[in-house]
Amino acid sequence: MHHSNPDENRVLFITGASTGIGAETARQAVAQGWRVVLAARSLDKLEALAGELEPDHAVAVQCDVTEFEQLEAAVATAKERFGRLDAVFANAGFGAARGFTRESVDHWRDMVLTNVLGPALTVRATMPDVIENKGHFVLTGSVAGTRALPGSLYSSTKFAVHGMAESLRQELNGTGVRTTLIAPGMVDTPFFDKGAGPGALADEDIARAVLYALSQPDHVDVNLLLVRPTSQDL
Image (cartoon, rainbow, N blue to C red; front, side, top):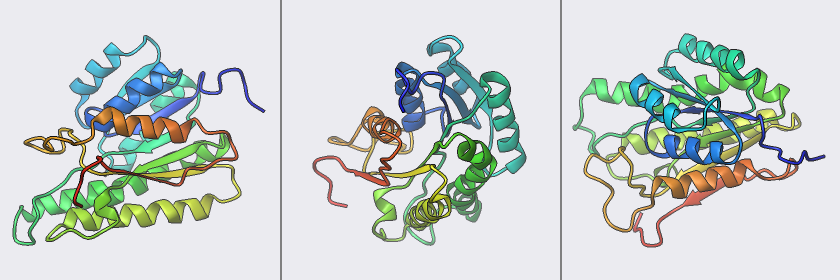
């Protein structure tokens, strides 16, 4: 059974929501009637984004996805503010220069914790609510999670996320919860210090794909969306 507007009053929890794909997904979700919980480490950017969205449709929560207690607090805030939590976009992540002797060891450690442990902890903190509401998990992978790139530990972290999405799908099979892995190619976001170059995708292209997956009828689960620019070598 469908309500007249199934997205009305539904709540989407987004990590990595302060910039890029996360922020644009929040904008499109609110435009389609969702309420959004904006989670990231940068509270000032989150509050600015919440301020530009419809009143009472967004709440900003400072949250480091590598800290489970902060995720639990963010979920509690979501439920206090909106009464429920339906869908989760585990999108926080960052990259590193290619080359196994480049970047600092600390940068690597932070990246692995954010990109791999982060989505796992995000799922763990939100799973009871998502199961209760027969909701939806969306994880941000990458084209770099489908093929190894030279010297790229980032690529390894995204291979992990791709495996995680399928492990999660299997665990939740029969609960009514859906699982989507979104694997972007080159997107011109703050992820790239100097921009992704001409012909890259825009944040809104990936956000549109996320909302497509979220808007399917209950019996349809779009498991994998691999979205490349029309011209991309990798």
